[in-house]
Image 1: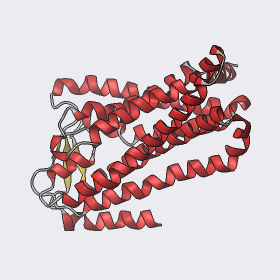
Image 2 (image 1 turned 90 degrees about the vertical axis):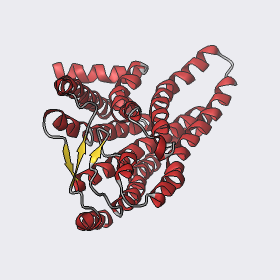
Image 3 (image 1 turned 180 degrees about the vertical axis):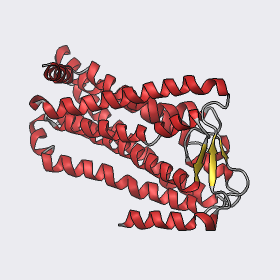
Length: 319
C-alpha cells in the first residue's frame, strides 16, 4: 500500500513539478543505419538472458540434489536477472525501431524498478557470499545456520529493502523541475543524466546519492570482501591441494559475477555528477544487460552439479 500511494504521488506531481511531459532517450546511437543491427543484437542478448536464467531456475527446482541454500539463492538471482533485463531491454528494442520518446511517469517508473532490481541483485550476492563463508569456515554448523527459515528471511530482506532505497531517490527526483531540455543522453532513465536536465537545484539529490547511495552500494561489497578474506584464510589452512581446489571452485563463479557487477556499478555511480559522460554507457550495459546474460554461463560452466541438473532437465524435455 505504501508503494501504491507513492506511485499516486508521482503521478499527481507530474504536472506540478515539470513542464516536460516526456523525455527523448537518445539510446546507444542516433544513426539510422545502426538501429536495426542494434535491435537484432539486443533482442538476441535478451532471449539468451531469459532462456539461460529460466533453465537455471527449472534445473534447480526439478533436481532434488540441487535443493541446497546455495542453489536456492541462485534461483532467486536468476529470477531477479530476468526481471532486471525486462525492465530495460524491451524499452530499448522499441526505441531502436520507433520514436525514442518516453513519458515522464514511465521514465521515473523505469528508474524505480531498475534500482530495486539492481540492489536486489546486490544483496543476493551478499547472501550468497555469506552462504559460502558458512559452508567453508563453519561446515559443521552449516545445516543449522543456513536452515530454510533463515534462507527465506535473507531472500525476503534482499527483495524488500531495495524498495525503500529506490523510492527515496525517485521521490527526490520527482520534486525537481525540468524545463525545455528533455533529451536524455542514455539508453535508459538513470538518475545522473536526469539530474543534468533539471533546471532546479540538485544539491540535495547529489548529497543523498553520495551519502545514502554510496552506503547502499559499498556496504554489500565490503561484506562480500570481508567474507572472502575469511574464506581465503580458512582455505589456506587446508593441508591438501585437492581440498583447496574444491573450496576455491565453489567460490570462483561467484567472485567473477561480483567483479563484473560491482566494478561497473562503482565506475558509474561513485563519481561526481559533473564527471558523468557518454562513456559510462558501456559500464551501465555491463551491470544491466551483460552480467545478467553471462550469469547462467558463469555458474553452470564451472559447476558440475548444476551442469548435471541441466542435463537431466534437457533429457526429461526430450523424452
